[in-house]
Amino acid sequence: MTYSPHRQPAVRDAIAPESTANTSRPGQTEASQPEDDALQLAYAIAAAADERKAGNITILQVGDVSYLADYFVVATGFSAVQVRAITRSIEAALETDHNRRPLRVEGQGEGSWIVMDYGEVIAHIFMPEARDYYDLEAFWGHANQIVYQSSGQHFSPSRV
Image 1: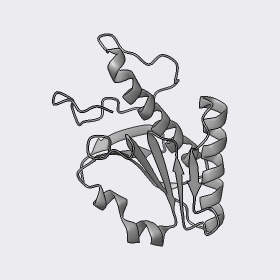
Image 2: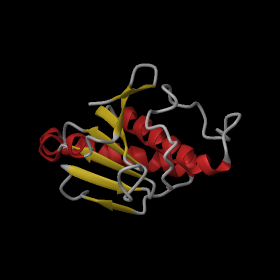
Image 3: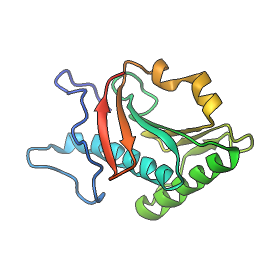
Image 4: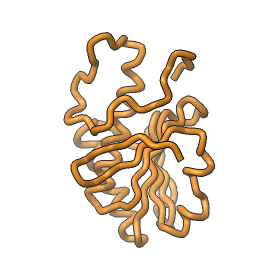
């Protein structure tokens, strides 16, 4: 991702897109398409986590403040079994719908924090205690946050 001083930090769409087909909007340049692809991938990860009843799903737009990824998706599972089920749901959905496999998955043995690296998007699936301890939202507090609302698949930008 390249830095542009004219880039707006706010999230453009408040509702998750219906499809991942050509999402270009009139006036949009090809240069902005990779970011939109990353955002689509983040939405897909959030939706797959929601299918397994993940709690407190948040997307952090870290691309402007870090070279690690464009987005982090952070979600909570309330047992080690649920954390692993969320991980499997994400893997299956992204492989089926986006033909994507994670570059690396860490933490599956313990199950209190699983990290799934998809390149431009990194998913963090936590148990509540681990999420509170590591508090990625506070650590990346200068990044824009998109809070996932499971009813109606809405996303709403917020700044904490």
